[in-house]
Amino acid sequence: MKKQFDMELFLAAVLTGSYATRKRHLRQAKIIQAAIADRWKQETPWCWRRKHLDWFIQYHLAEHSSATKYYYSLTLNLLIRRLDKKWVLGS
Image (cartoon, rainbow, N blue to C red; front, side, top):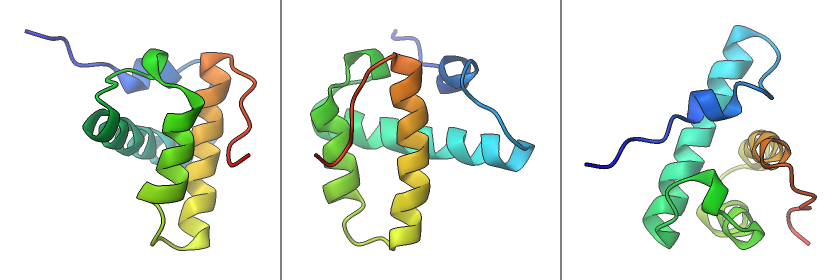
């Protein structure tokens, strides 16, 4: 049996802000993780590449509002910071 990846523990080092903001980032990070796992079969953020995050923002969120894309981009930036990468999304 495979152990479930703990996104809350993964993001604990970079999560700041109010309780509501932290909960939003965790909820969105879990949605991002589920979408990437479903599409690319990459279960944990340690396996992700920049193309996975670009795909999420460009195609998975294609029909969402610009405000939704903005809030997800904030969460993606937290994930990138936690992974200690120098990625710039959308380029």
